[in-house]
Image 1: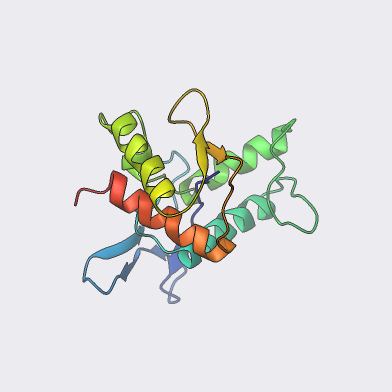
Image 2 (image 1 turned 120 degrees about the horizontal axis):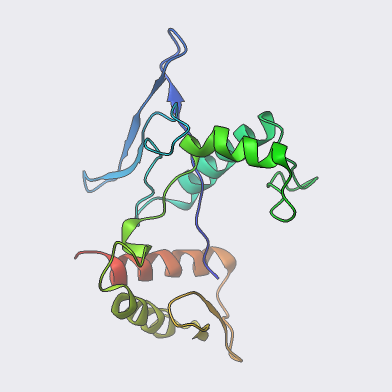
Length: 174
């Protein structure tokens, strides 16, 4: 299944204030906007885009996880990811404190923001099939997918590239 990714922010280094950073893709279109994460109400959360690279998503996720750990959230040993079950009051407090660093999924992947979400999701599944991935949508439709009996002969890296290409193709505006 595909997964959402998490976020971070940069510092200008002079006085400790957080500043936004903007990465530009080769097309000249910004690939990821990472605003200040000083607010805990979520109003300044970074927005992940469909074309955000896997490397950038990983960097942002690790930064968010580091914030959680720094604020006392329990983490899985050896994995560095936060415990998700039976959250304690300390875990909840850390999540609230770090909310400004947790990125939002691309709006195209949000049913509430994309009125064509189910049509786009159908196109996404078709694209995965067309690229040699035997996947089956899970129920309810549009919530995820799993491999069918044919699976996929591609490497993990290739599957990630196909997945991103198909998301951009199916959910993108172009």
